[in-house]
Length: 350
Image (cartoon, rainbow, N blue to C red; front, top):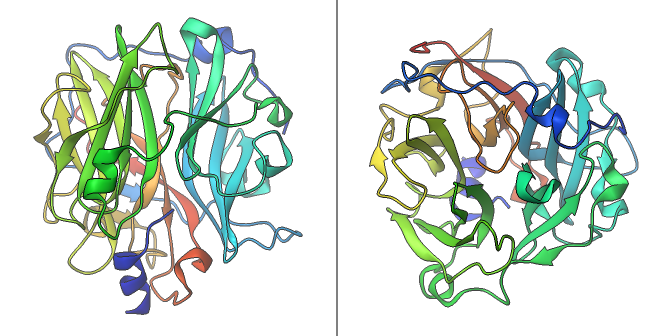
């Protein structure tokens, strides 16, 4: 029960590099017109794949992963968490069964720096031929790098906004401004964020201006506080359709994901699998081998082989790298032992 209460009141808060663009596009497949999302989902889950190292960092958790696959190598950026705060880590591997053996590259030892950095998102911005790492630092921030596999190459953070936008201040209540997410179409780039208080926000700027010029956010979607909590993902699934995934807190106190679709990142979102009974991913539609190691299916992202700013994924045979935690954990939120696991879709339409 202590774990559930913590969930309900507290926010979440290897140099084997790939050539920047040619390798990034080599595994891309374009969704066909026959490929569609189902109206309900079923998944199987791995066991725990990645946790903290036994090193001087003394971390409590590895969480909030962002992942891309390039030529058979998985590149993961994640939050590191302990009682004293958050930062970021990068690691890569070629086989999920070996993921926990990957070297951790702690990004507070780079120009990204010490202090609060969390909830990363990685993508390759093709118009500038450079990688972007989006994250929260009390604002919405980014760093850039010419080589995803070179941890030392990240620039110092730059904020998207001058301060907290007024619409967020007006609506956030007792929540937190968290979980920034960028996606671009042929004309614009959109920055989504959450407030742990039932609001999903969206800003935009012209593709040619990115990362500058983000306008004042608007509310893209709203619901009750725990029904639309945090950790949004937005993807282009082809055929003029976009998929939105947002984390919620269920009536049982555990985390799960709801989903919607739209014909544009700035369009109207229509429910897909968006209820506790028919979720995108929740303990009730995830099968574990043996005893489930987590009852929360929380902050993560789809494994992407198309790494560019369009965030195009196939709607078929989805894989989702997520964070989970023992239902018996009772630590304070920052000290909860979050670990990473992998969902594999078991009811693909294609």
